[in-house]
Amino acid sequence: MRRNSTIIVLAVAALAVGAGVTAAVGGLSPAAQASTEVPTTDGARTITVGAGGTAETTPDQAVVTVAVVTTADSASAARQELADNVSRMRDALRDADVSEDQVRTQRYDISQNYEARDDPTAPAYRAMHAFQITVRDVDNVGTVIDTAVENGATNVDDVRFTLSSETRRDLRKEALSDAMDNARGQADTLAQSSDLTITGVGAVSTVERGYSPVRYETAAMSADAGGTSVESGPVSVSVQVQVTYNATDN
Image (cartoon, rainbow, N blue to C red):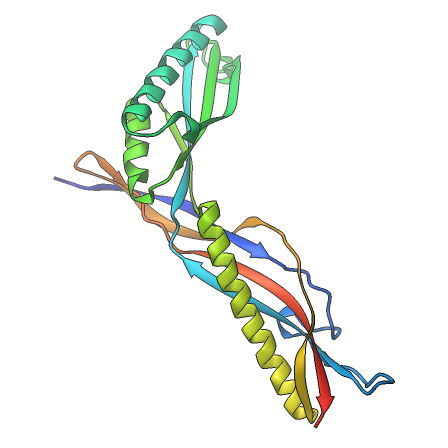
C-alpha cells in the first residue's frame, strides 16, 4: 500500500524559568555573571554569581486543536449542521476514552461566508466550532486525530507536545539543581582565583516566567493503513538563579 505523508510543523513547548536575573557584572549574560566584593567592616566577603540550568524529558501530554466547519444558505441551517457534527465528534471521542474534561471549546463563530462574494453559488453562511483536546497519552495522538476527523472535524490546526503539571514540577527541580551546581562551580573558581574560601550561601533568587514555545520541530504526519502517526521531540525546562556566597580570606 502506498504511504502518503504530509509535513506539518509542531511547536514543542518549553518552560523558561528565571530569565532576566539582575546582572552582577555589566555586559555579561545572566549565565555568566559573577563578582567578588570587598570586605565589610567585620572582614566578611561575598561572591555573587548568576547561572542557568536545564533539564529535558519526553513529553507526557499533548494538546490537539481541531475545528468543525459547516456552510449553509442560512445561519440557522449552518448552526444546526454544526451542532450535529460536533455532537457526533464528541460522542466518538468519548468512545475512544477521551473524557469530557479533556475537550474544551476554543472558539465558536457563525458568520457570512466571504467566498460567496466571488461565487454566487457558494453557501451564504459559515459556522465554526474549534476545540482543544488534551491527550494524556502521547502515543494516542494519532488515534485522537483520526477519530475527530472521521467523525465531523474538518480542520486539524495544531499539535503541541507539553508536560503535565507533575512532570513539570519534577523537571523544574532537576533544572534548579543543575543551575545551583553551575553557580557553585563558578563561585569555586572565583574563590580560588581570589584566595578565598566559601563558607556558605548568603542568598538565592530566581524569577518565574512560565511556559513559552521556544523550539519547533518538523514531524511527519502520515496516513498508513488508515492511521495517523505524529512524532514529538523532547521538552526542556530552563531556569536562572542568582546566588550570593559568603567567603573568608585564606
